[in-house]
Length: 342
Ligand code: ZN
Image 1 (cartoon, rainbow, N blue to C red):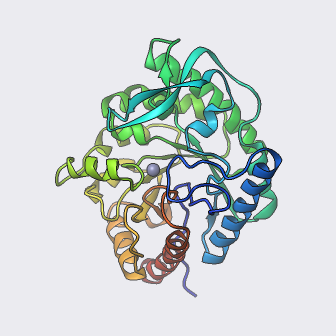
Image 2: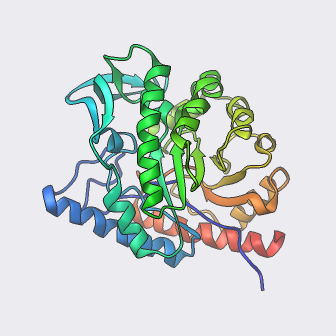
């Protein structure tokens, strides 16, 4: 009997057309109030089923309940002025976004993701992963009118993330993942205080702790930025050694169709590695053969009991049909690789 490599998605999945605008990173909801709350859970159920049908080993909520991966959290934080958003260049000015402003000490208003986490736990017996934005990426996606210091504000966010992470663990979540695309933009700061902020967010957790670091969604601004990064993308080389020494259990990285030299995975010795075998910037569906090949390359640098096949990033801005097919491809590719390498 052959076994497959474990499989997971990075986090987000497209929202159905009846829930929100499609093919957008910051979509508007199609309903409000109780109707919207119900619609979010209905969409969550749809994607739990799709992930299970595809055969994935780790299930997520597909981030159906949040408009955006950072702002979904910020909406539940006191000290933030959402009514007066300002335009800010984010990820080192790669693109402009309308962001809320921090105007007072940060404090959680209450639970952030209780409804969707408990709903997921009630509807799947598989391993459940829940994603939260990382502290450094949060700092980079909000305008500061209060702290006047990125590190101080990151540590303040990390405390709030830790509160919610502990509550998610109590809800029955098995893996808590922090998304830190900013680690690939501010590499020196990431290795210095970014990982420290993550440790604060993870303090006291017994659930698995993961971090996802990518080159962003497959949107135009990111694709243009990637074109300027040259032949070899070595951004990970600064932060991986700091992560290897940290208490983080799993690291998710981009691999397929990226210019990341696979040998950088060696720097994560001892950690579980979520290897990106699915491109999120292309609608072309990966073949099982391509996926098995990517896994084969990664196995030169990652122990086979530490490898999890994953997507490069979230699938949110893609079409629902393409995302469904990519989930299936992921599972089939992990099976083929299993028959070859396990
Ligand atoms: Zn990502």
